[in-house]
Image (cartoon, rainbow, N blue to C red; front, side):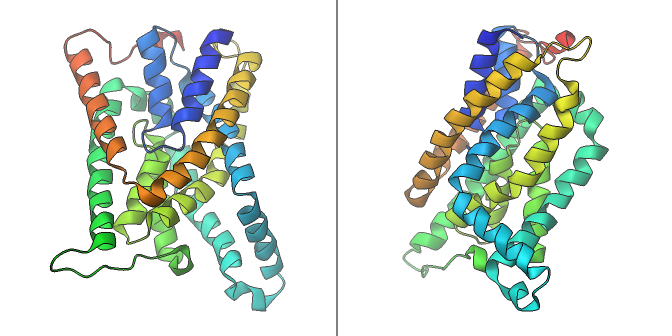
Length: 292
C-alpha cells in the first residue's frame, strides 16, 4: 500500500465511520474503483482505532463519568442504581454479540462478506430499514391531523433487553455495507428512542468492540505476503482520527434537526450503481481481492 492510498483511505474512513453509510463498504469500494488491492478487514479494523479515538475525545466527559460510576458500583451497592453505572454495564452487555459473532465468522468477514454484490445488497436493504425507522421517528415527533405527538425514549430508559438488541444490531455491521451506526441507530429508532439517544449509545457501544478488534488485527500488519505495512497504516489511522472528529461533531448537531433520508437515498443509489457496474462486467465483484 502506497502513502497516497493510505491518505485517501484514511480520509474515507474518517468521513464515513460515523455516518450511516458503512465505512468498511466505502474502503472496499474506494480500492475497487481505483484499481487498488482490497485494504482488507485488518486495515479497516486498525484505522477504526483512529475514529474511535475521536469518539473518546468527543464524549470524554460522558465516558469519564460512566467509567468512574461503574468502578464505584463494584464496591458500593448504592451506586448500582446510578444511571451512569448502569450505562457502563449496558455497554459491556451490548458488546457481547459482536465479540462472539466476530470470532465465529472471522473467516467469512475477511472473505465472502467482501463480495461487492453482497455489499450492494446490504447498502440497499439497510437503507430501506433506516428509511422506515426514520419515518416512524418523524411521525412520532410531529404527530399529525389525527395523531398526538408521541414522546420517544431517552437513554435513561435503556435496559438490558434493549441493550442486547442494540448489541445484535451492531453485530450486523460485521458485514460490509451494513454500517455500525446505521444498524444501531435504526434499531434504536425502531425501539422508540430519539435520534440523539440512539446515536449517542451507538457511538459509546462501539468503543469496546472497535478497540478490541483493532488491537486483535495488529498482528496482521507487515506480515509476509501482506500488502499493508506499519507506516501507511498508522498514517491512515491518524488521518481518520482528525477527519472523524470533525464529522462526529457535525453529525451530532445534524441529527437534532434533520432526518436520515439523505443517507437513505445515497445508500440505495450507491447499491444500485454497484449492481449495474457488476452486472455489465464494468466491475468485478471480487475486484482487488487477488492482491491480498
